[in-house]
Amino acid sequence: MNTVIIYASTHHGNTKKIVEKIAEVLSADLVDITKNKNPDITAYDVIGFGSGIYFHSMHKSIQEFISRAAFSAHQKIFLVDTCGVGYKDYTKGIKKVLKEKKIECLGSFQCRGFDTYGIFGKFGGIAKGHPDDNDYVKAENFAKTLMQGR
Ligand SMILES: Cc1cc2nc3c(=O)[nH]c(=O)nc-3n(C[C@H](O)[C@H](O)[C@H](O)COP(=O)(O)O)c2cc1C
Image (cartoon, rainbow, N blue to C red):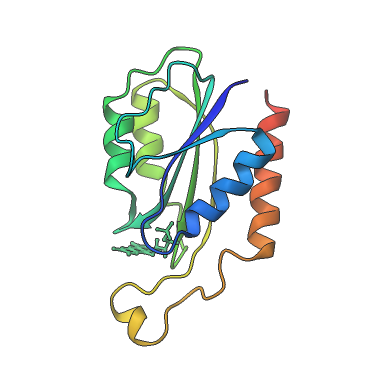
């Protein structure tokens, strides 16, 4: 299964670290959508989208890409995000869009990532040290479950 992970990781590179681990397990290609706004997904069976959470949502470029992309019927999606607070599933909105587009979502992975945005920065940030080794193991296990579904 040809897999690509399209990601945006603009705050501290937290999500990049996680998607790199997942890509290793899945032998997936990686595309930074902030550098390539229009990646060609036609060659892929599975497309992962990874993003930090910015104001309760995935990066605008990811949201916009998912909204406008013409996915093929056989293509499946998974979602990955890192967030500072992590009290809820921040991918719910995107999952709703995918459902409306009748695109199958294989699952989602979320963990915390070092956050120095706004007031948190004044106190040295939150989720310090994340993603950590435990987060990496969980991300790799998530990737392995995706492999089993192939
Ligand atoms: C502009 C901005 C807005 C953010 N908004 C949220 C938020 O709504 N909820 C949350 O849990 N974390 C929020 N964060 C924290 C990031 O989601 C977190 O640090 C994440 O790991 C960043 O990923 P990245 O380093 O890959 O960009 C925000 C960070 C920034 C810079």
